[in-house]
Length: 434
Image (cartoon, rainbow, N blue to C red):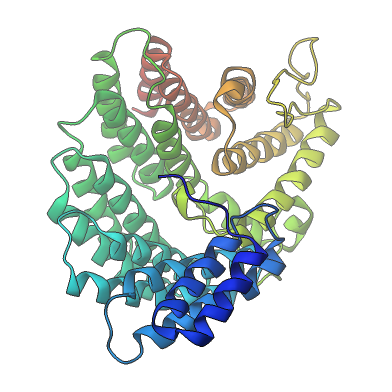
C-alpha cells in the first residue's frame, strides 16, 4: 500500500491535532516524526536525530502506564533512533536505545505472541552486537544465546536463520575468551547444516577449518577441509548466483572471523598504528559479525583503516590497487597484468599479511556482485600467488599460510558458483594441511 510522504507541513498539522485531541493526535504525531526522516528531502543524520528523539519520547509516554497498543511502534521508533545515533557516532546513546527497543519488543510479544522468530529476537540480536562493540562480551553472549534458542525453536532443519544465529554466538563466545563453549556451538552449527544445501555446507566447513587452524587445532581443520571437499564434489561444475547475497554474507562473516587474530595482533603492536588499526580508539571493529548488524560507527573506522592498508600495499608493489567506482563499472586499475611481487622475502611476508587484511576488510564492507569476478577473485588469487612463493622458499613456515589463502579463495569461488574450481582448490588445501 502506497503512503504519501511525510512533510514538515504534515508534522505541523499533527502537532495541532496532538494538542486538541491527544488520544488520536499523539500516536499520529509520533509515527509522522519517525516517517519524516524517510521523506524527501531526507534530513541529514544529525538533523534526523531530534525527530526520532521526539517520536521516542511520545511513545514512552503512550506505554508508560502499562498500555500495550503502541508497544510495537515504540520499539520500531527506538530501533530507528539507535541507528541514527550510530550514524552520528553517539555510541553510548545508541546502545541504550537498542536496549530499550529490545525490551519494548519483548513486551509486545508477551501481549501478542508470534509463531516465527519475531522482532523481539531480531532486536535482541542488534543489542548483542552493540554490547560486543562496547566490549561487554559476556552480556553480548547472553543476548545472542537467547536469540539462538528462539531460532532453534522455530527454524526447520537446515534453515539459514539458525546458521546466522549460531555463527554470531560462536563469534561472541570467542571474543569473550570462552573458546570451549564456542567450539561446542560450532559443532552444533555444522550438524545443523548437514542436510542443507551442499554449497552452504562447504562454505561452513571451510570457514570452520580456517577458525580451527587459528585456534591451533590443525587436525580438526584437516578433517573439515575434507568435509568441504566432499560437499563440493556433490555440486555441478558451474552453479548459479541466485543466492549470491546470502552466500557472500556468510563467506564474509566466516572469512572475517578467521582474521580476528590478524587485527588483534596489529592492535597490540604500536608499530602497526600506521597500518589500519588505532589502539587508542575506544571502539575497535568487531570482526566477523553479520553484515546486517555492523554499526555505522565501526564501519567508518573500518573504512579509514582500509585506506591506510591500501596505501601500504601500493607502496610495496608500486601499482595502484583496483577499486569499484560508484557507477559499478568495475575494471582493474591496471591492465598490464598483476603487480610484480618483491624479491625480498621479508617484504613479501609483509605484503602477504597486508594483502590478507585488505581482503578481510573488503569482505566485511562488501563488493557489489558485478565487481566480484573483476576484483574479489583476482585479489584472492594474488594472495595465493604470494603465499605460493613464500611456501616455495620455506615449506615448513609457509604451509599454514598457503592453506589459509587457498581456503579463502575456494570460499569465494563457491559464492561465485565456480564449483569445479573450488573443488580443486580445496583438494590442494586439504593435501597440504594433512
